[in-house]
Image (cartoon, rainbow, N blue to C red; front, side):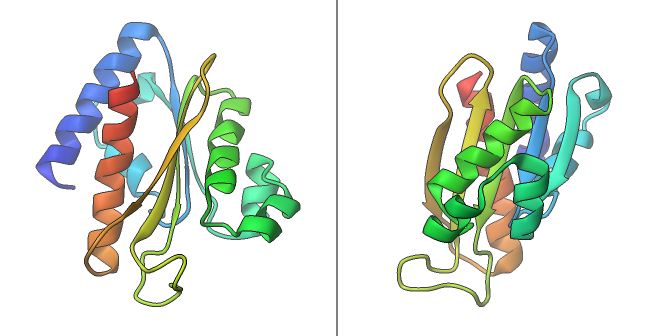
Length: 159
């Protein structure tokens, strides 16, 4: 992982450890890269709960409680779905969660959801879920790496 991602993940650990909290992730397009970056930090077992790679829609439903209707109405790459993913991680016992769903490419994009589009959601227990869509340039690996960095930076900012 890039040096700045390691720094962000370490800062995240410090923030969580100070609160006695644990974080969990629900990832689609990043395929576990957020969880991998977090667990690259020594001692992360004290503040990392679990990472779910819910790439398929049925996994989002079964593991995170995303409804079939939400997926049908908006698609997997949408605000409503990524927020439901983040809430699903909190329901599994985490205090904080990060969720990602996007189109890393090179195919799969559309006019409304071009390649490089990634939805993020961050949930902190007792607070409203926040979410944002970002469009990243580059190839598949670059999109996924940028999304990983953005996801971790977003939760650090919120804590």
